[in-house]
Image 1: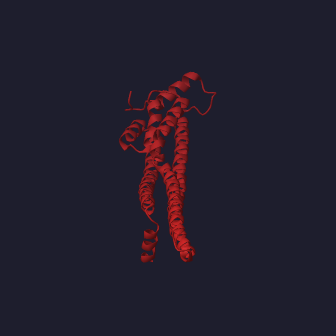
Image 2 (image 1 turned 90 degrees about the horizontal axis):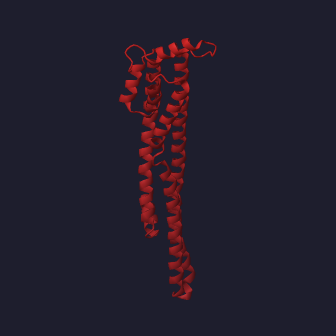
Image 3 (image 1 turned 90 degrees about the vertical axis):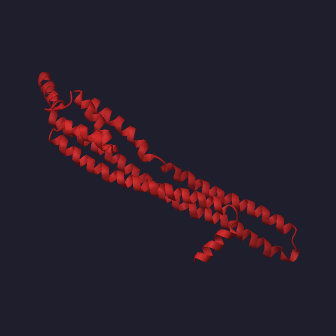
Length: 235
């Protein structure tokens, strides 16, 4: 099996090497992104559970400090909202702040994933280019060959030239599949951010006593200030 693969690679010509380099780069990017996204998923879930408990207990100062120390994507997004809450701003401003936090962390999640689609296209094009150049060389060689050997020489040359296309496709197809997998994983994480943001907003609203619009304005403001500045919270 290994001997067949080595012979297949050697018979493909020069363009097998750049295709192999593209494949190696794609595998490195894929492994790095998969490990990063998997770690982020676990870290974000842990931080959300921790922050949800702290906010439910009205430990807003501790939650804000935790978001600043953790540095995870989930903590960053929720931290943007808690900073607005500490300034006694309303639900709408807190929601905008968390949306801003989500936009701030999304580039880190989507970073380098799109390279896989580009590398897959490059591998395919390199394979086609190698085949075309191989066919040109084959027809040029056949033109000066013995007429009795032209048929066999031409078929052999075409077979060798097609190896680059086959190797290009063998490299491109897995990279496209991995790109789709990573894109789905990224979308799941982004969706979890949106759900977490809604849960945090609802939790803060439930605690502020603003669920009903019939409450007097002075009482509403006092309840909001009580949530925004609990004992020991930042000024």
